[in-house]
Image (cartoon, rainbow, N blue to C red; front, side):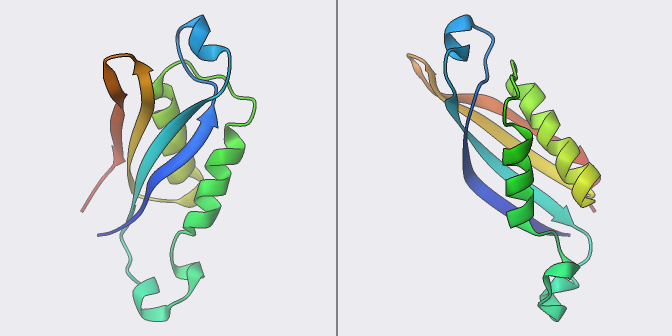
Amino acid sequence: MDILFLRDFRLDITIGLYEWERQAPQPVLIDLEIGLYDHKAGHSDAIVDTIDYGQVAQRIKDSLVDKNIRLVETLGEHIAEIVRGEFGAPWVRITVRKLAILGHVKELGIIIERGSRL
């Protein structure tokens, strides 16, 4: 399996349980790993033979406009559903990180993995 990845994909979104978190958008960093069963694009050099990471990033960004999410788990699941359902990825691993939300914690978040990995 080949893995296409995006690291430190930054989005400013409304996310959080607490009212003070929901007053303004906050930065969230996303690491996205997308499994590709077929390594056809490595031979063809054609974007049609792979998943276009630019389209994935834009679709995720567009899907979160005006969306109010409470949990990092929900955000991770939302992204997994887009990547697997709309882009046909057989496997995905998503890391969602909120930054400096607690005074004594630099980052907090979740890693989710969906699908089968060969």
